[in-house]
Amino acid sequence: MSNASAVSRRLLRGAAKLALVGAVAAGAVWWLRFSPVDVHVHRVATGTVVAQVMGTGTLEARVRAAIGPELTGRLTRVIPDQGERVTRGQLVATLDDRELRQRAEVARADLAVAEAGVARAAGAIVRAEADAVEARASYARTRDLAAERIISSDELDRATQRRDMAAADLALARLAKDESEAIVARARENLRYEQERLAQTRINAPFDALVIGREREPGDVVVPGATILDVVSTDELWVSAWVDETALGRLSVGQPAHVVFRSDPETPLPGRLVRIAQRADAETREFLIDVAIDELPAAWAIGQRAEVYVETAQRKGVIALPQSLLAWREGVPGVLIDDDGRAHWRRVALGLRGSENVEVTDGIAAGQFVIGVAAGAEPPRQGRRVRRVQP
Image 1: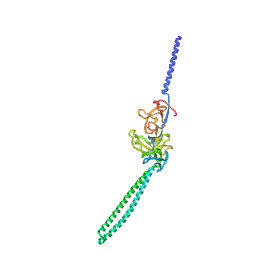
Image 2: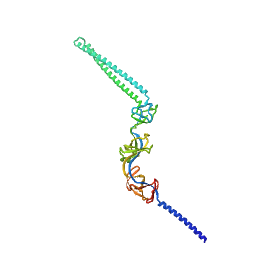
Image 3: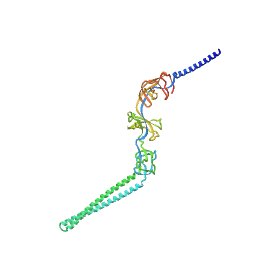
Image 4: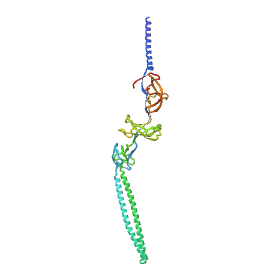
């Protein structure tokens, strides 16, 4: 009898343990499936939705120049340094000018010699004109005397010969003067050429500019096309950004924009769209836009990276919902709403889409609560009880 009682007690204890385990398991299942889950909610409200086109680019200057020599030579001075400003016409660099200065002096001497030749030719013309006048007068007297048969015809022939020779000498003197004047013109042109080459040893700034690069130093030998200084005009700086070709129809010059430099991502700078390229890259299918900045930051550098956001449309007083709260199902947009403490998925109709918010035209109303789901987390299933918590 005692053995039977012991067996019974063991069975009862085993059954009790099984019942307890089952109760715990049932409680756990109930808790997992039916107890309220904590959720963060967003109260639906009206606001402004701004549609934007985003692009990535670099800060550039509309006017930029590479200052370099027009002839080959050795640099003797490079005056401004990187980061300094220069004014239009300011001397910024010089080349060794000793040889060219000597050539200019030789050309100046050649011109002086040529001009002296013109003076000599002019004097020869004066003498030839005097001889011609005298020969014509002598011929006239001889002709009259020969007509009266006072002198022989031989003397008339000699007078005629002297007259013709004097006329020929005058013509030659005049030709010599013309030739001398041509030599002067050639010498003057050669002097001008040598002076221009000499002037090219002094290199000046083409416009008011900021020096952003000093590429050569005194002693370097430079050739035409080489860059000594890289300069930009700071009158008009903008961000040249690449934008996907699908945005072309939404962009127009004058649209408001803002620029975010990667060096200061928390400070958007207002600007405007000023230029749209008419050619897209054949490989990336992107095109360039230029966004001018109303006011540059305190620290900036040509070529630094930035993002531009061009405003293409704006709607105020609409249901504005963060895009992160959309819960898509099979390509259909919707949201999870907190409907009297239970989660329900509701289909919505979307309007204007911004970079952060989206306009909801139907499906929810202001004052309702939309459940947010963290990235990678499972959303509450349809009808699951939820409990709001403070974010």
